[in-house]
Image (cartoon, rainbow, N blue to C red; front, top):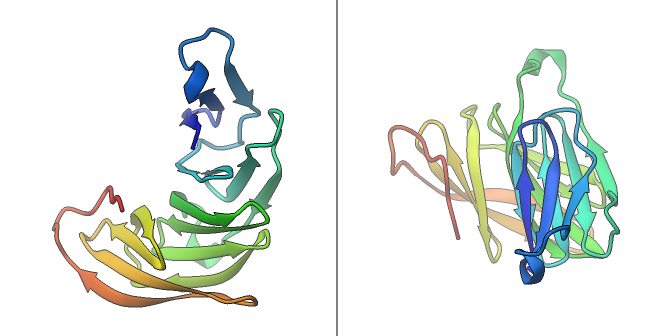
Length: 177
């Protein structure tokens, strides 16, 4: 990717081009989200930012604007404090795919601008996500590293757990692949 994205606690986003990083005035600012941005994913075709209850997707071709926004709500039983902690994106500009993980342990798979599948390993908050090929790695606050196999077909997007290990008792706050 040729861009660096920074998110602020007030919901604002700033995009820097790596080729003009040290030039003044070469920063694009995006309209702030209602809530603080909790997670970012940079892809080959743009980036995604997630806050409390929404996923915002921006494509590199945009001129400082938002390409689409997905809002989702939790029901009252899940509580209002269910927040997105991690997001991961892949796919192509004409068919972007995302995984969002939250404080209730849910993993939401997004395709065609909608949540197409919700899965969970347990109720532990998911703090981090990373992807390598068809595997999605989720780190939880309970110290588990859960490995999901993401199954993608022309009509479906699904995930199944293939491995769960507990490398840290204090939680897996970051994971990279």
